[in-house]
Length: 71
Image 1 (cartoon, rainbow, N blue to C red):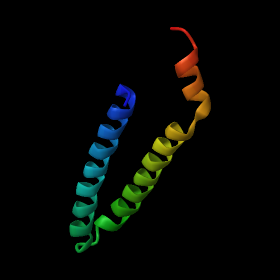
Image 2 (image 1 turned 90 degrees about the horizontal axis):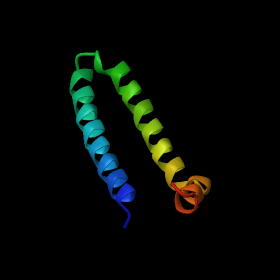
Image 3 (image 1 turned 45 degrees about the horizontal axis):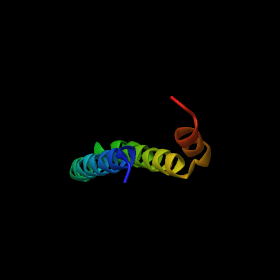
Image 4 (image 1 turned 30 degrees about the horizontal axis):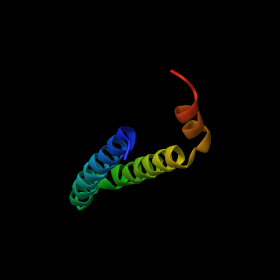
């Protein structure tokens, strides 16, 4: 496994844990009524993170240039 793949997995796991902690905090705060807007922003941020990771993993052009262009 390449180093950039390992780093991507570590970052994804760290971001997942971070968003999970924020989600728990938003749920606790939503009982007071202030957590609902934050919960919506949290879901949008999580969606963007998943899209970015999926685009990077599925981009064949980036992989081609990474493997074939001399540095």
